[in-house]
Length: 120
Image (tube, rainbow, N blue to C red; front, side):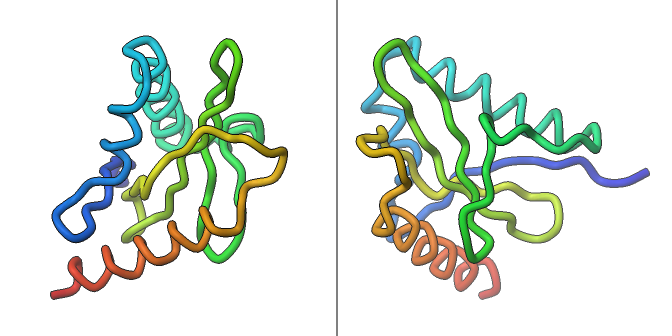
């Protein structure tokens, strides 16, 4: 039997950017983000491709998970570490239609730092 997908949050320099982002949300918003994370992992474990309104490939191995709240949209960036491990780098509340390049660069930096620690 194939191993199941799991998820985790990247730790960088003793901090966990995704947890810091989640702490900035209301309890209801936080619960919705966790529900979407669970849904994403469940779809991957079922062999189904998440729809673009849930998860979208951005660039360079970085993906974005979108969660709509009443009056704003949260985006959480993630990447894959090893074959079936989803690592969430960080999140932010969207202010523009496109994902800001600085946020994508931040995810790439977090991924490279995470992979350095992972391979030590």
